[in-house]
Image 1 (tube, rainbow, N blue to C red):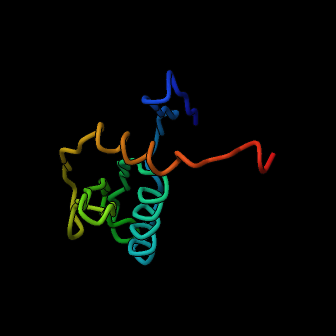
Image 2 (tube, rainbow, N blue to C red):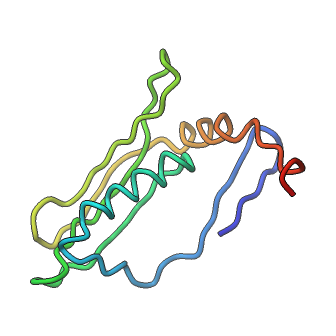
Length: 117
């Protein structure tokens, strides 16, 4: 994973692509989706998370988590789109990368790495 900043107004994020999706078993689906939501909120990043569909153990539920903003209250809310039910499928969603960049800049604006290094 790599973070970079060209200037104070632009942040970019890159990560290695996963070559295979995680193997989340049926009983782990709810905790896994909670984990995805927390990571999205914590880092102000959209998360695209495929999962294997191979019944009876791996039931899919691939998900996309993005954020929407309540600008009045200055709160970011998660929005999750996922394949429901045990089935194969394609998941598509639109999300605003500029919004995520702005939310991330605001979230990390007060970081002071020199304080804890």
